[in-house]
Amino acid sequence: MKFEDFVCFGATIPELEAKDRDGAIGELVGALVQAGRLPAELAEPVAQAVIKRENEASTGMGKGVAVPHVKHEAVTDVVGVVGQSSVGIDFAALDEQPVYSVLLLISPIDNSDAHLQAMEKIFKHLQKEKFRKFLRQCQTPEAFEDLLREADENPSW
Amino acid sequence: MDKLVGEATLEIKNADGLHMRPAMQFVDLASQFDCNITVSNGQTDADGKSIMQMSMLAATCGTRLKITAEGPDADKAIEALRELVEVRLFDEPPPGADP
Image (tube, rainbow over all chains, first blue to last red; front, side):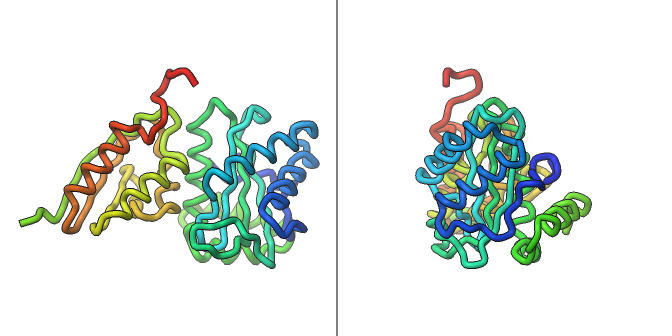
């Protein structure tokens, strides 16, 4: 699976206003609503579902990245969005360090395989220091799109 | 003398596959052993103690993973991981079970 298959490029947030985890999740879900990828009335339940999942176990994998996610009937395909915080957000990450890049993922309830494929794509790149660095340097939605499309075209980098 | 290398092929049998929660269970368990643990899906090799690397295996239900353990407690590690993956199914349901 490619980033372009699930990332909503019209909803990326180069600088999150929220300074805490739940606020950041709410902001990213809100951006998906604005971009037309989620019905407005589902924003709150989806955000709450992501937060509930996050409370069970942090998706802050260390190295400044977090991948909050949930399976929800609001979507029929995997939908992802990226947001960034220059000050860092406390995600109760495994390495106890702040999170600067947040990749939020909402997956359909009945397609575990698609969810796993999106995760595969995300972590293949996120584990590379160069990719994490370039991601943090993105300051516009266009920069996110360029970076992620480049990663799609050159899966090896 | 202790055997230093252990190897097993384990099949993912829980319906949702190796998503983040099971991957974390795997990493937590693997980290309790002194050996190096490598997990391969045939295309990608992952460090069995790294949640980022384990998350990129995309192991769906039915996927067979080759586990290699190297170190003093390699055999114990392999047995414990086999129990988690194939017996306990990460405490998750198999395909077709009632949700």
